[in-house]
Image (cartoon, rainbow, N blue to C red; front, side, top):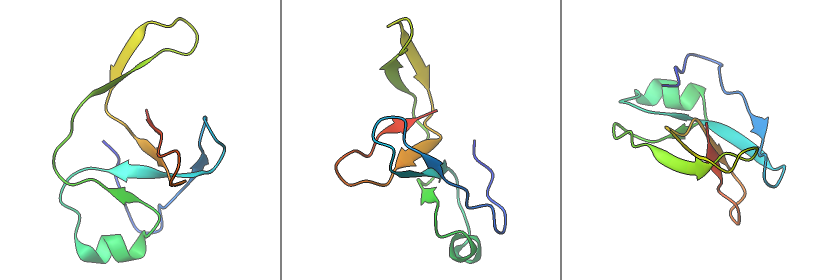
Length: 79
């Protein structure tokens, strides 16, 4: 689970398209923390595993997404 604290809005490039991606935060996050960290995807309390093929082996991998691309045509999620 991503822990969000003041000023922790970090970004990373999307591995698919190279656009900016934001961390995903799960749980009940107070509005004050959301205001201090605008570059975070707040996903609420429901955490669900997703699967994707491993790029190297093609085997299925399961996990809870930690990042989401912010490009509207991509929106790739990964962990």
